[in-house]
Image (cartoon, rainbow, N blue to C red; front, side, top):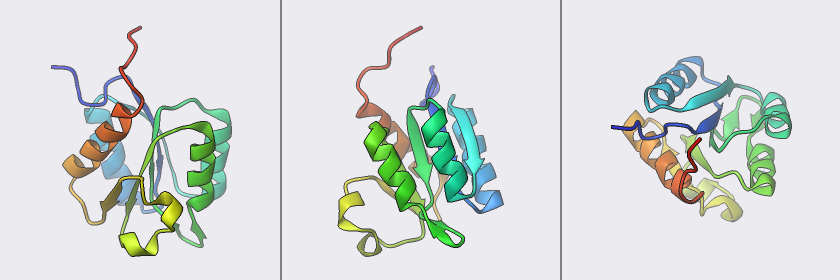
Length: 128
């Protein structure tokens, strides 16, 4: 059986160390190649500018910054993403509400399902 996210490169933007480690572990077990995790908005924007990846996981609250500029950069590049956050849907600006919200605390299967849905928006995966 092929892992759920086999062959996908996924940027992880999360500032809580243990949460980031759990996400990285779950994505790796699901077959993904993880970029990061990164914990600061500026670093995340650098990755968006210079790295190639298919999907992203964004925590909205990154300490003193909100990750919306990263979301905007991903939208410009056409990269699907999910928000993994403690924010309530009503706290998220309307322009981002079409993106999957995985509320914290969450189990990894919910996060993986959200990413699999986002991956489906990319169309069939090309081999090799």
